[in-house]
Length: 640
Image 1 (cartoon, rainbow, N blue to C red):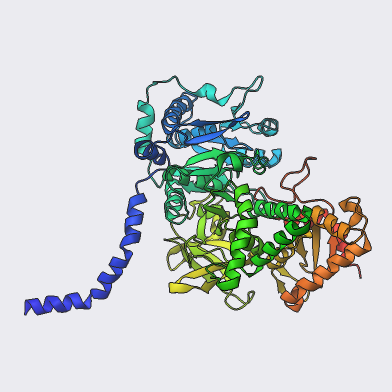
Image 2 (image 1 turned 90 degrees about the vertical axis):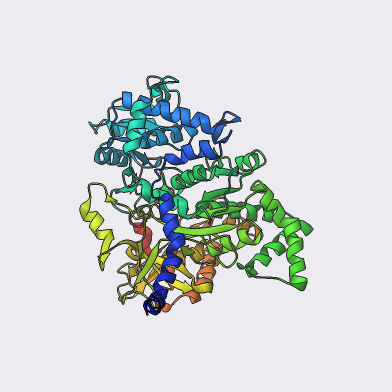
């Protein structure tokens, strides 16, 4: 009788036991990462897969690298030196660099293992913004890279009493170089080891100030666990392995690139740091490093696409015909699509004669490229992938440290026009309202990567952290929808920013981002911004592509002098009107562009004259700035 009762008991709770079994992989995943601090990755690399070329950069014309052992030695010497400087757990040190170097990584690891919070700042922001960040973060010291950074931070320091000294990563007269802080080889590490032992995964590790499109930046508080979760969660998603070569050229002040570098450390990959000024060409860094992987932002992919297109325009005869024949094939490409017969033969010819040269221009070994920070035009995604250059779009934000979802590299795991599938452990919630179309809503996120909050700004924190049924959700401010995929997977599609939704004077809501994205896919357009808040119709500010307009003028017998003069030509204006008429049918009546203005000057993340930039450091539109700067042009469009 007892045996029968026990059997019935087991049968009754079988669903629960099966549920626990299903949870096992995730529980093991969480357990594995639960005791990690980020600096542990460096020691793990030295113990499990020591590299001769762990972190490197170009010095003059030569690539120079630190080995895993050299990195560990330098990190420990730096930690001792920073303690001798008077820094203690809980203090803050800021930095700003245009190009990351191995020394920046030494400083970063040295700070985190003694509990000092690193505050990396964007290199393109103004002295006023440096002053704000240094003051609010209470940074005691700052280390800067080459360029105008020392002068900008020095100007900010004059109004911030808490900053004791500015160091440099380079030789500069009258300024202490950061490596002067390094303790002697073989120094006593007992204090460093004592502090390391007290640091817990849930301890705060860094303050990352957002590049926000409006108002002052906010200091996002991230813990070791937040970032460890992100690094661990993409371990089996991104095609990076021990010994692979990876290229890092995005600013480490952005959490996207910073977490990527920790991920490479975890994977045991060789990291080569560079900038965006010497990537391409026969003597470029892509050819020199031949990377297997690198992250990027859509704007850089767009520029590469534009260069490829321009080179095609320079060809003649059969070579030109072949180039544009192959490019036209990509219009039909999609993930997991199979070709047979004559079409498959065409693709084989295109890959051999045209696309192989594109791959070689990127070093010839790329296994994957991950793009994030803003939306990537579908045409660009389709073209690169069709050419055998795997590009996947991901979605995240600083407040999520940063990963939320990603298109995978395996079959059936990616979809054009979406930002992929949620990371393991991340939950998505779509909050619908009458402001959005059916199925759309504001995106809320729950998971281990969600920030502690904004430093010293509880009110701002309360605006983005929402408690639902006792659970803590991050309100992203993005609008999106979930699309069903195979095997029960759901792909997240971003349709707009909640704060960027326009409301016309007729009460109609308009999402500008999809309209702007279609504009940017066209060869004639470099940048675009939709206008229409509290106005009677929707219009557009367009920055034409100089190369695109010049090519069109030459082809159609229109005199080309420069962009400023050419966009005033009635024939050029007529060509852009034709583009508007081609785009408009993709949208509802209230969303269609009625008027436009062509602008000659490209929008930039930093202005040489010191005026306010039109783009954030992550290349997002500062809509308020653009509206104010081109108020006269906007008023002219609505004059009638």
